[in-house]
Length: 335
Image (cartoon, rainbow, N blue to C red; front, top):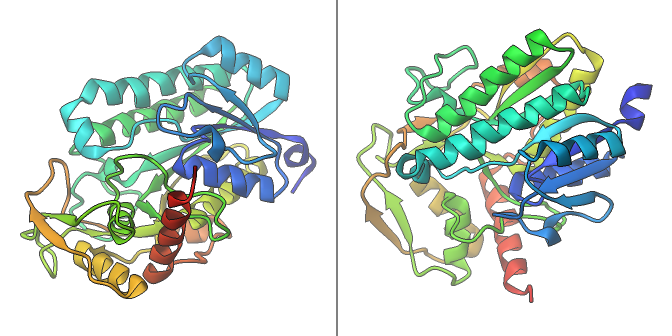
């Protein structure tokens, strides 16, 4: 790392949430000064690790963000704050355009005004919609089929245009299905009412739910259930660190990269994994398809493997499930 990276503080929005808290851990583990801003609408103050400065607030509060940038010498922003439930975005689209697009616009404006040189954005594979070809590469058409995907794609566009007009480069990291928890038990998925399959399944395995609903078994997939590329949250956090280092090393360059393993698992295959890890049988109940769910979404991850020295460390599906289960059991003992 160069001199710039050694003294640069990183502002992490949504750092009290699931992916954000793991990114904060990864930054701290690598020696970066970290400032977290989170409104705690879905995050938890206890999820912010010791060693990070925490400010409760709204990313659209430009006066607050300007103060944080100035007081802490922020050189880079990792932006995780936003709403992430696809079916909810179909029912309440304006919430998603407000939280994911309008507020991101305000944050980008604060970054530009404050002279922040590097911006890493938590984007999504939902920007692809229903891809014509799977695995899907970064140059595939971006045709979202739900407001969540559109809200993220609009932010990608704002970043691209801002980077062209201002001395700031960016990385848009398009996540596939994030799962698992910190292997050391320091963080995990803690949101109430989560809709992510592995989270739901380990809740059922620990008695928090009576069963797991399978949303549709008539997709054009090998077993009829939806196929997704599950990426361990710790591997995803590591990708952010590598992306930050790349942005610093190549200030004229911006990146758009898929974050996935290039391997898909169906809903039934994931539930089979939970059965193996727990040595029990989850009850599965068939339910109608959810609005906005594509049949299969798998990453072509050749670009990230070529652009960054990132290599998956916890790609085994049983490992992902076991880490998620360990966190779920830990959550059950929290006061």
